[in-house]
Amino acid sequence: MSSGSTSTGTDAEGALLEAWAPERAIDHHCHPLIRWPRDLSARDLRAVFTEAVDPQILDHHLPAVVAYRDAVRRLASELGCEPTEEAVLEARKKIDPASYANRLLQRSGTGMLLLDSGYTGGQPFSLEDHARDVQLPQREIVRLETLAAPLIEAAPTPADWLAAVRSALRAAVRGGAVGVKTIAAYRAGLRLRPVDAGQLRAAYATIHQRARSGQSLRISGETLCHSLLFEAAEECRDLNVPLQFHCGFGDNDEDLADSSPLGLRPLLADPRYDGLRLVLLHCYPYHREAAYLCSVYRDVYMDLSLTLPLAGLDGKRAMREALGLCPWTKLLYASDASRLPEIYFVGAALHREALAGAFGEFVDHGILTHDQAVAAGVQVLSGNARQVYSVEAQA
Image 1 (cartoon, rainbow, N blue to C red):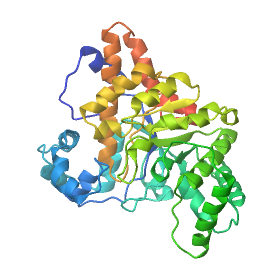
Image 2: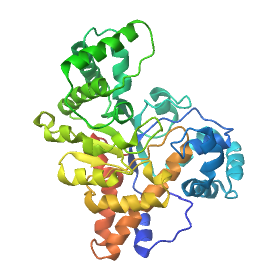
Image 3: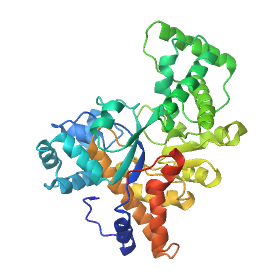
Image 4: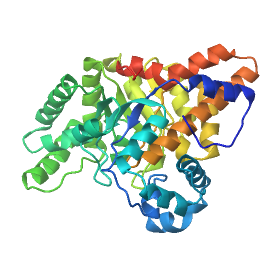
């Protein structure tokens, strides 16, 4: 895999990157590409390297973010052009977009994609078209809130709705889905509390009436979101599939103060959820809290995913900090990439470099041998996902 990097790092880092080069990673959290855009604007390219949606940020401030400048440098190296945004966009126009996308995905060292198709920005491929046109094995991660919303109209009571959600989750897993993801952090926050039955009836009556009136639905608020989440958690436990949680930073409609994974303790302390595997996504700036949960609770896992391509050098520091507490048997590889193949490519390179930096430091300090560090990195890149999701990467 080519990263376009000019950083030499330590001898241990370089040796680890070389040893991991043949390993095809399982990207356990990512989103479908959009349909082969050829003529991108600068704003289009910038948008996948930030969570900001404000045009002023994209047009005037993102070029001053070091992570984006680094991404442009890496892409220019891959395209064989000058390390400027203008040169990258011009070089991209000259390449067949489907071939280019598949080339970048192959160069990223990815062996399998576990796709959450709930993100709909930029008219992405359907899962069926994505499986046909993107030349990698793929499996589905069901987005809970997207699955649950269409079931409201036909369900007269909250109990009917939650039963329908559980039935739909069972059908999705029978159909090949390997996990479920919740975006409760966006809709209600992650400070989980028991839900009052009377409040649930009232909140559900309101959204049910909206559904029957043909209005657009957005499941939100603690009462509905957390009721849905508790029910889905039980079903995921019964189905033996992991439940992914968006944690930490995200779009600007999220209250970051309420997105710490520490609020999930009710799922970890209640015996009803024994055996449920929780996977904490992104986590930054709560990666230390996530690492703590991984260190003390048997069935908690985490990734850093979009932290690495968006947080610049701080992403590499986050990797070291996460591995201070999080066992490497519980850290998963993910890109959280969407829309454009460039973010898959850059995120993959940064992830491997951050891993090599952290494990190379362990080697340099005599904590691990080179062979032990190689084996640990393979676990992060693919082995842990095989266990958590019961899938196999491409050979």
